[in-house]
Each structure stands twice: as structure tokens, then as C-alpha cells.
Length: 107
Image 1: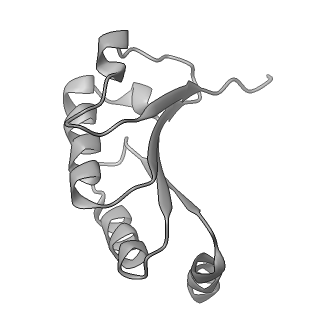
Image 2 (image 1 turned 30 degrees about the vertical axis):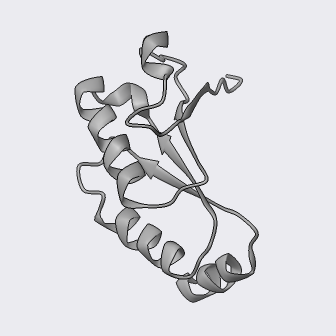
């Protein structure tokens, strides 16, 4: 299954990688991004569950990914809709930009 995913990524014009920020360890995400970058695959990064960690931990995490990889775009999402980042934090972070979205699912 993993081999099929990599083959599909090789043929893709753009890949979206979703990172669960509630997980402490992001090693797998880093490994995937390193491989995508090595193979010159354009990637958008989506940080999910941003409402589950304090912004003091979230913002450095986002910055570390943006500084380590060439990403097309970075998105921050929260299914709960609890977006707690002030508008002032929507400015580029260390020269990088990102977008935020709140997803609402019907009950």
C-alpha cells in the first residue's frame, strides 16, 4: 500500500500532506516531506487539530516545517471551528505565509 502511495505521488502535480499537530512526534511527517522534496514533488502542508495544542507550541512547530522544507502552501485547520489565533498572527511567520480554515461538519 505504501509503495502505491509513493507511485501515485510521483505522478501527482501536487501533494497535500496532513499533519496531526496533537501528536507529539512528527518524525514520519518529516521523513515524508524529505522524500517528497528529494523527488521534487510540489507539496502543500495541512496542520490539522490546531485547536488541541497551545499556540506557544503550534507556531514554532509550523515555523520548523516551513524553514526545513520548500512548501507550496501551508494551511492550518480545525474541525471544531475553535480558531484561537489572533488576526495579527495571520501575518507571515518568519517570512512564510499560511492560511487558516475552520471546517464544519453536519451533525
